[in-house]
Length: 112
Image (cartoon, rainbow, N blue to C red; front, side, top):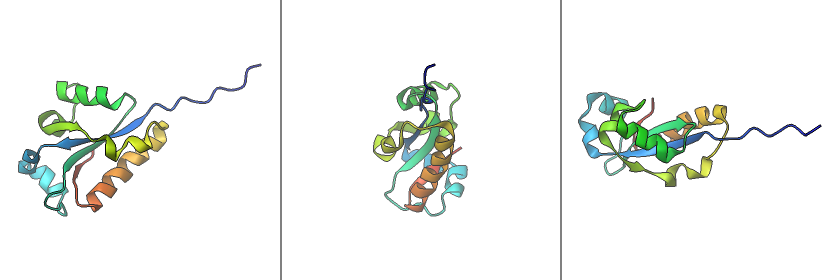
């Protein structure tokens, strides 16, 4: 009998840099009262796909967050690569934790 297989961890958190134009969105401004001048505006997400593919899908309008579709500039792997890949439950938790940490550091953050 073969030993049980380890589950494959394939979920990822990711961070997308958003254009400064996102600040013109009232909902984004209201969600970020502590945003510090000069800090990036970002979207934090979680996916079972490769983050590059997920970003491409956002930009193409496939299950897209509007802020990423309209204002997404690039992925910021320096903020998330260290965490990936991980199990689904861990990715769900890390998405929230990373968004909170970035907001506390003064970033303008959208996390759906």
